[in-house]
Length: 266
Image 1 (cartoon, rainbow, N blue to C red):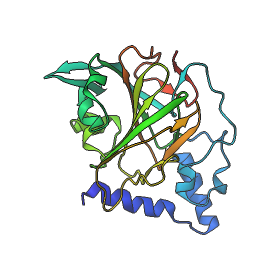
Image 2: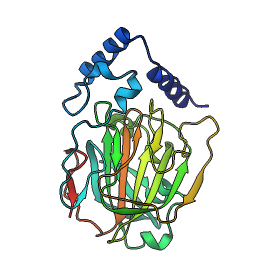
Image 3: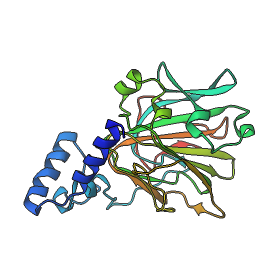
């Protein structure tokens, strides 16, 4: 087992431990203070029985959903662009100057013809201060899910510069989705200290597990409404949104902070 997975699993155990209430209160408040978390939409820090409960906090005040295609999560846009072809593969940028193969990222969760006309993409980085739940960006159908085992490198910007092809080296889960416009993918990338990537529609999907193995699973008539909760990260990570070229008119740019519920395309 690699060190990043060992440390992440250990951190997950600690984060899930319920300390005596007066100690947990101090831990939670220090965490909120250190990462400067805005708790105005959530319970007060002292009400969470573990760090993991704080990480995976739910909204107490429902978000207003903008019209159009919305962001599936809170986070920072690291890249937003169109893929380019090299050696008959589609490549995207994780950040400026650092690329990854879309085919490698999606593994067995695409048909070649679905990529033939090019792709648009957005990378959303969720930091430890962000709301860690993710939601359906539109009314959609989930066609299939693909799990790919891998490392758990940090996905912070400086690591993306330091480790080449980081996204395709890390553990990840991709959802192949469809709406009235066409096919798109949501890729959830594991990272250091991310205990789990969870999905409400299929609790059997296990990430950061001791005996993980790659798989692809298809679904029949699995639909979600816009804004419906998909699942959550335990701590922070990255969501990559990939769509067939021209399917959406993305209205965000690199460096921009985004919130779940905010419009990112018509």
